[in-house]
Length: 133
Image (cartoon, rainbow, N blue to C red; front, side):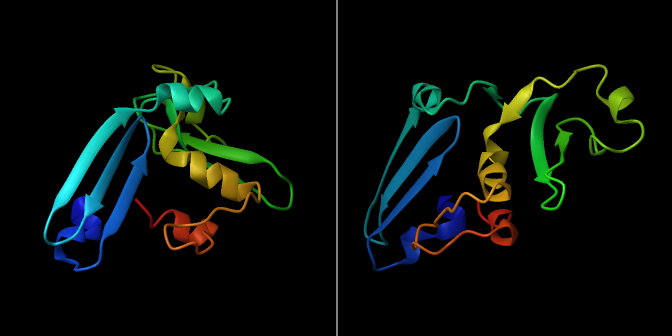
């Protein structure tokens, strides 16, 4: 996050927040950076995310919802195939499908039409979501 956003090069005071399995928070500018980290498991439990897990083989890492049919397809870590492609079941037979990792939670909300904002209060679209850390 620090390497991508480079607050150490800015004169302006910047707050960076990355929430996943852990929350990393950085506040500062080119003069000084302060950083901290905290587990977020209990925070996600309160958000009713019941099938979340770390990014490991078998975890759903990508989901796409067809806007016309509302049918879902997904990819899991450890397989290059989408769930609707031939050979998917065989490809995941060793690990199974074990849950969803946090990296795709934002994309799922966008696919269902839930509005999200970035750090500059600009709308995040399905196209820009994959470009953000």
